[in-house]
Length: 316
Ligand code: SIN
Image (cartoon, rainbow, N blue to C red; front, side):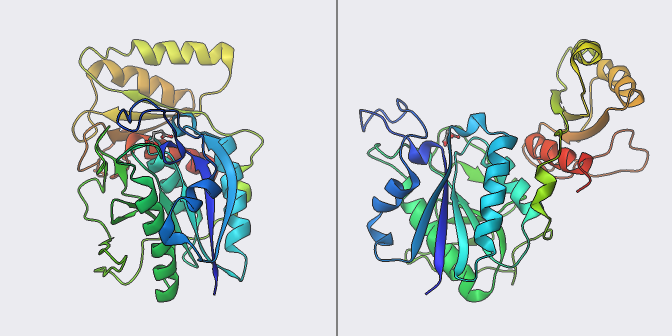
């Protein structure tokens, strides 16, 4: 039997509180990934290995954890005796990690991110079922020869490039930005999917995650009264405090921006800052059109677009 490796990074799935009925009072990232596995009866006796890569509330995610996760993931996926990998993660930035991994992991083996909206001590804790499902999906995918990165939450398998947190508190918090899940699990963890493969980008050497300096890319909102003041401030600050390499605009509608922002962003481009446009709207994204001044980011959320621009600036 091949092993499934479970990499722990923290999150609410590993969170604990004192009152099972006040699930909002807790601290994320308290239990080890080994403890999470031990608490799921359906995983008993399976060929599982756990590795604690990090222990963070994912609101604090960053390149240091991504690098550690990337190198451990690469090591585990290269093992002949490993069928695939589950990653336990916080829900808050899961869409960013999922998109990053999607861009870097090839199609050879399944990699499944999972999380929870309630801490492990809550009376309605969703982590155990999500973790059990994630392991089942790795096993099922490996059996079918499927590889690539997906997220499994509440019985749905989401494509890593589409998945996003769409509700701040509901158990059913994730969606695909208007796209259906790749598949839905039945009560035995079986699934059928319309397509015969998972979306993949290709294998990239993880050493790209260790440049001397990561590009700095920030996100800027367009909104009522956005007069460019913030862009001017950022450009002035950049003069004295070091580089700004890219800006993601979270634009209105189809990536439009307040006329007050246009001059500032053009000035940023003239000074060597790469500016891309996404949308602050939940569905539809921003398609490229003739005459675009700032390139469009398709259906990526602004946070995923930031990852995409960082990879672009790293030459990936
Ligand atoms: C986190 O993202 O680590 C905390 C919130 C969550 O997992 O739901």
